[in-house]
Image (cartoon, rainbow, N blue to C red; front, side, top):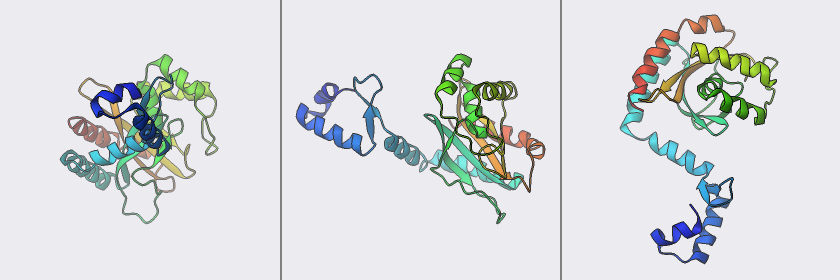
Length: 225
């Protein structure tokens, strides 16, 4: 929306709206659209919306499913949502093991080297996925991080076929993760259900044995989206 668009519903003069929009932009609640014609939601408003949704009754239902999955697998389980070129941890249940990797609710992680992030990339149309990867900062986090676009696209194609996101120590040394999609009623991925574990306790092959548990839970979670 532009400042002019805001004048009628707010009843405020243009100069006042300019000042308020500048303040909201500085604080991260709104930002200029890429076309320069108006304002769109900023990162702080997106985070506020996610945290607000986390207080609803639906969140209690989702958290209960997440707790059951975590207990069955014995590792930390997460619900992760796409947010721009990152993935946002909207809910999690921690493992009871003292050895764990800390990624608290509200954390943002990159899409190119995480199980949920690569799963999200695989859900995009192929041309859109390739275009996005061409402009992503493919930072190398570990020796296993895929930083060449062709290698990443090849891995994403395998994920697209299997509908399983894999992170084999690509984001954090000594951590593996697996993710499956949570879809809306039109079959579009809106979030990912994932778990991660220290590599000393679980390798990718063992992690794959829990896919039936993840997929059953993701199906139950999709009803709430």
